[in-house]
Amino acid sequence: MSIKAFYMVPHPPIAVHEIGRGEEEMIRPSLDSYDAVARDIAKIKPETIIITSPHQVLYSDYFHISPGRHATGDFSSFRAPEVTFNVDYDEELVNKISELCGLMNFPAGPDGERNPSLDHGVMVPLYFINKYYTNYKLVRIGLSGLSLEAHYHFGELIANAVQALGRSCVFVGSGDLSHCQKQDGPYGYKPEGPAYDEKLMDTMNRGAFKELLNFDEVLLDKAEECGHRSFTIMGGAVGNDEVDITTLSHESTFGVGYGFAIYHPKEKQMNKTESNDIYVNLAKMTIAEYITDHKRLKVPDDLPDELTKTRAGAFVSIHEHGMLRGCIGTIGPVRDSLAEEI
Image (cartoon, rainbow, N blue to C red; front, side):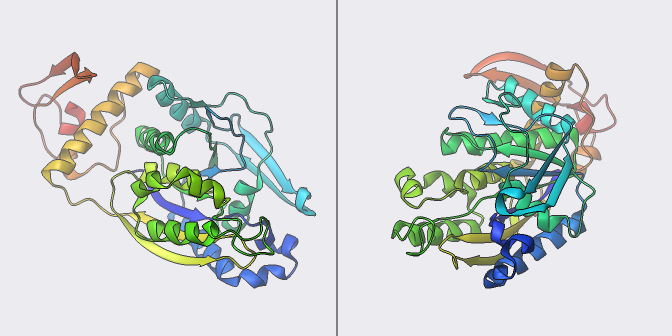
C-alpha cells in the first residue's frame, strides 16, 4: 500500500496559538496529540498529504476534489490574518482519482468549485504539520450528502488511485466529534453527544472502520457531529488492511469532541486469500490505467516478493454483473515476474 499512515484529527481553531492566545492550553491533551501526529508525518516524509474536510465544498450528490495547482488560506475569519498558508496541489493524483471515479461512474471530481480558499478543516491540521514538515503536495477532498457506504467506497477508490501512481501518501481524516456535550457548548447539551463520542472512539480505537457504516443517521444528526463521513472515507482507504493503532487523546473541554488516533498499515503476511486480493487489485489497476491513459501500468514498488520474485503464467478475466466480458492469459511465464505477467 502506498498510503503509509492514517490520522484521525479534529480541527478546533482555538488550538492555534494565534487564535487561542493562551486559551489553547485548556486543551493541552489535544495539542500534545497534534504534536505526535505532526512528528509522525515528518518521520514518514510523504510526497502527498490527502485531507478530507467537512468544511470543504459540499454537495448532496457529489464529492468535490479541489482543482488547480495551488491554493492559499488564512485565519482572518478567526481574527488571526497573520497565519497564512500556501500549498501546492498534487494535480496528477487528483486527476487519477477523478479518472477512476469516472470509470466506475462514481460521483466525484474537481467540478463545481465555489471557493478556492483553504478551509479551517484543512488549515488547522496543516498548522501543526507545517511545524515539522512542509515538503509535500496536497489533495483536498470534501464530503457529500450521499450514504455512508458511498463515502467508504470513495475511500477505496482514492486508495486505488494512490496505488496506481505508486505515490507515497498519508491520509488525514479531519473532523470534530459531537458539538453538544456541555450546556455551555456550541449546541448546548444533548445526551446523544456523549453517547456518539463514546461509540465513535470505541470504533476508531479498535480500527473497526466498517462499523462506521452501521451508525444510525438519527444519532449522527442529534449528536451534531461533523467528522463521521470524513473518518468513513479514511476507513475505506484503509480497506481490509490490518493496522497498528496508536490511541491518543479524546476530550470535550469546550463541549465539542476532539479525538485523535494514528493508524499504520501492517506488513502483510501472505496467505492464499490475501494473495488473490493482491492479484485482483493489480489486474484492476492495470486495466484502469490502460483505459484512462492508454498506458501500461508501472509495476508498483511495494508489492510482495510473491509477485515480484516469482515467475508464473497468469489469466485475467473481466465479469460484469456475473457475465464474462473479457479474458486473456498465459499458460506459462513469458515475463520476468508474476507482477509483470499480470
